[in-house]
Length: 107
Length: 133
Image (cartoon, rainbow over all chains, first blue to last red; front, side, top):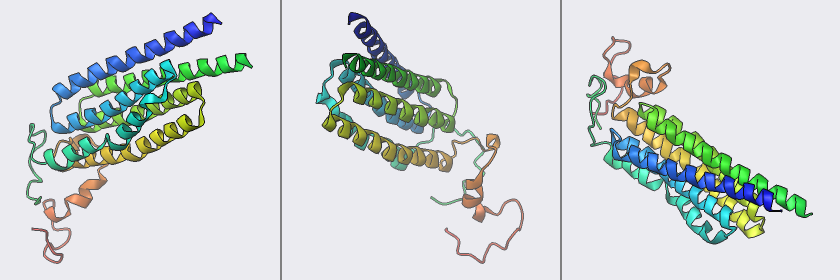
């Protein structure tokens, strides 16, 4: 009886550690993304990683307390990256990676 | 009967572990890949698959009707909203010129966007259609 539960605890502890490491790597990417669009993508993935971490916590404790928070994050987590891609990245000039040949088109 | 419940618990734990591992792999791809489009490629699919695996693991461990409905709703909203964000980010990346056009194998958006630019040659006379500017 104690053996499989130990396996469960080890697996879910490893899952929580993976999620925390993924969040740390995402913070690294957010801090030095070259453009705002990288930060937008990283923000979107960060919402999903937070949902996965809350899911791992809920599976660890068998507790459905954080399910509304996961639902709201899944429902509204994309609005930040959509706002960045729609309104901020247009006026953001990180570095010209190609020649400005197509700059004659109007915005 | 208790054996089957234990098997379900362990399967849920294994699914949570696999989902977290896939999330971590996607994030490693996001850190190491060089471009906006490849980062978006590394971001969206492991994120969605890993999240769905984690939610399936939670559903296998909780086994209640209301919690199952909430988890299905979470997965549904994630599947609905993740392509919207990825599409808008990729569109904005293309339009603000952060895409290496020489490295693309297929560029169908170029013919859609740069048609009134008329730089390669007079394929069609430029003053028939209403220009945008």
